[in-house]
Image (cartoon, rainbow, N blue to C red; front, side):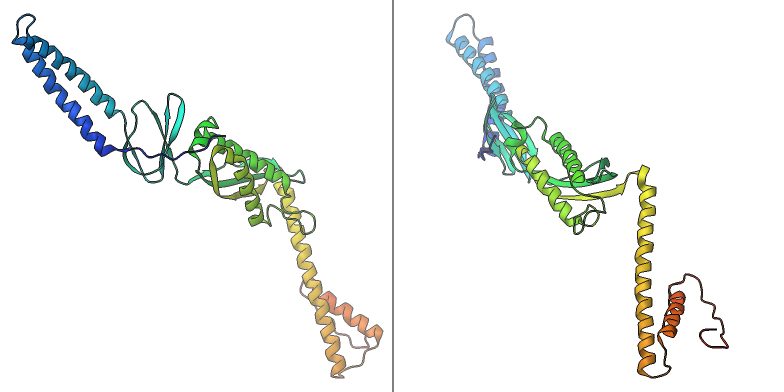
Length: 301
């Protein structure tokens, strides 16, 4: 695997003066040579000096152009990877105006944090139920050499590996009905996000990418089973509500019997207690409004 090497290069302002000197001075030398040759006849020292001036003017101007090809600038949180004839020479991470060997290949990379919002994928959860899931990943380039040399296209690599990690994550957890104390996609959001980030970091480390955050942004049953699952959730909600109602009704009946016994308001045998409990539970657990019936005889009439 490639490893990044940080290097320092020359300041661009120093080389800028040299490049301007060659670019602006060479035409003057060139015109001087043309003038000497025009004023000389035959093979005279003046003509020879003119040829030298022409040669120096052309070479100087060409060298000025070569120097100009070595300038580059870097913004904060940016990097420039340098390679010479296919050989990696290092990475510049400081911001500013610089100059490097004009024959070096310079490739700029952004070191800023980026957000990848994945598409909504239809996958199967641990129990085989089709679900829709989407994620957002915050990442940045950490090792420029790995990002450029170890993968073909690191941005595309991040996108494809993120989708692969999401599919594997969905297959590892149930949507919302797992075994007892089992983490599910719906209930264990923080645990699932931590597991997703760890898997993404393991997959993307070979590309020199650091994953800062990974979270689920969309989670739902697939449309073909959404209606069935909604009815199941409604049934579970009704059952849970009934359990609370029954628990509260039993507590109220127990409290009523205890109060009657403690205050000695009425003495009830087991049969009358059973009848009273039955009536109270019907009233408290019934969905409709209770309609009392007046009894003019005993409790058994």
